[in-house]
Image (cartoon, rainbow, N blue to C red; front, side, top):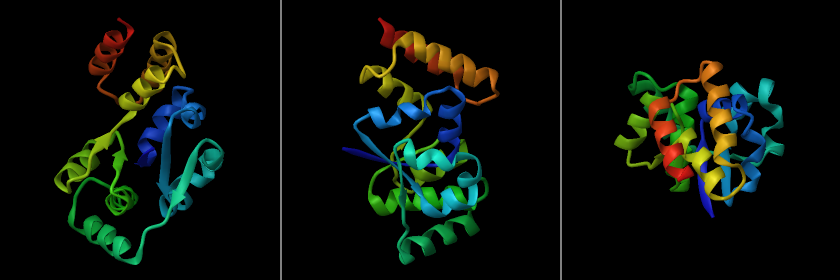
Length: 161
């Protein structure tokens, strides 16, 4: 089972596209740092824990690492650094669409996946069709979500063939 640590960005993308509730259908474990959930997501996304997400707890060492990162980098937020640190602690991939966080994670040696990868996983695992993915992408784009739309659609069409 693949473990993925998510930031808020991907969660919002998937919710906008009407796909978030489908994550439990995938053979993966999705975690959110508990501090990120309570500080940023709980108020508007309290139901995440019923949609396949589990809370991950940072060890004291990992918490210190996240705080150090947050103070020395420009771009990723403090909560983004918690997600990155938890991915490093769990030795798994980070799930984000935030460019600055992706770049930092790569520098820190952490594999990164994003919304496009999740949509492709939903198709590959026969949870949704390519047509449903295309509708979800259109909804996300119309809602102002910022994905590399040309790449997303090119990869979607390649999967449809």
